[in-house]
Length: 53
Image (tube, rainbow, N blue to C red; front, side, top):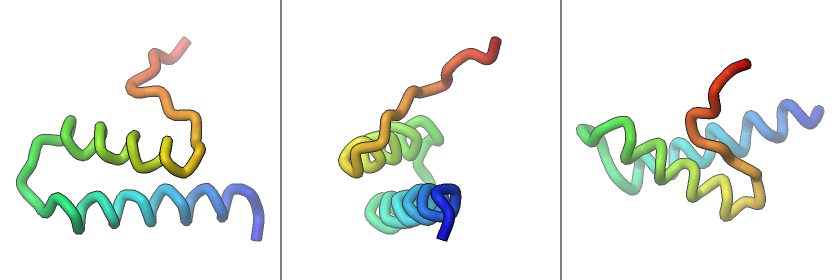
């Protein structure tokens, strides 16, 4: 398994956990904040809406 596979599985798994916990119908910003929190708990460095250069 490559590092990309591991990261992809972690991100998808975290997104699924967040959606299962919160359910549908909330604003995107709520899911974004919760996903960021989940990923940080997994020791990922996360930056929200970083500007492209």
